[in-house]
Amino acid sequence: MIKSCLQFFVSRVLAVAATLGFATTFAHAETYTFGIVPQFEARKLARIWEPIIREIETRTGYDFEIVGAPRIPEFETAFLDGEYDFAYMNPYHAIRAAEAQGYQPIIRDGGRQLYGIVVVRDDSPYRTVEELEDQTIAFPAPNALGASLMIRADLTNQHGVEFDPIYVSTHGSAYLNVILGQAAAAGGVMGTFRSQPIDISEQLRVLYETSRVPPHPVTAHPRVSDEAREKVAQAFLDLWRTGYGREMLEQIPIREATTATLADYDVLRNMSLDEFSVE
Image 1 (tube, rainbow, N blue to C red):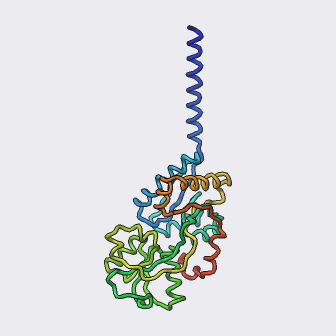
Image 2: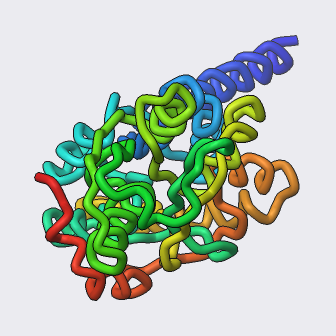
Image 3: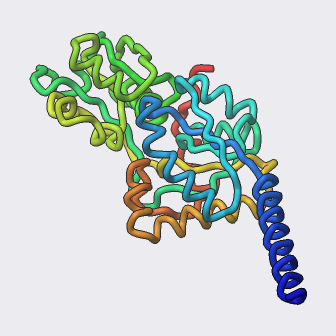
């Protein structure tokens, strides 16, 4: 009887110790901030990213704090100041972030290319971008790559079009400005255009497409250890290899997760985008 009680006591102590050990490990799990470029409005971004980040937490053992920004300019200020440990950003942002803070791309979509589109109302008379001369064009932000920088560079340098740009914070707002008649056209990217509700997208028509570049990467600040970078990158790759993971990542959109390096984005250095960037 004494032996049984002793065994019970020992087993309980070991169980409590194991529980305390787990709690201590959990309490001291490394925590990283994860910034996300505000392509969509905040609730939609949360619906897309929260399940993904929870999966990355499970697969790495790290904790992540999703850090949003109300508009793209605030997001830019944050990564230029090095506020994010990890961040999902456009390719031009990735170059600027590398120059300012040493951020390095670790994951991107290998299944598609990024390009800008100019959309007009489906019933509008515009058939070429030259017909947008002196018209108002809505953009989500000055430094949105496909949806603003590449389009403005093309219209100015390749087509000699003068236009009045307005900046309306998000891709969705830019499209809506066209529908409401506040702008003759809007800049966007195919991913956000296709994700619009049908009652929005069916009222719009793609007038123009820019050249293609590799799409948005997930980047890591140099203060993040090599081990953590590799674990996070591998978590994204492993998540993509599952059926439900592909469905999650498609919403970003990442159709085919692949590793990324800064060299993937060298093509952007030859586009003279700096002259259209707004600090």
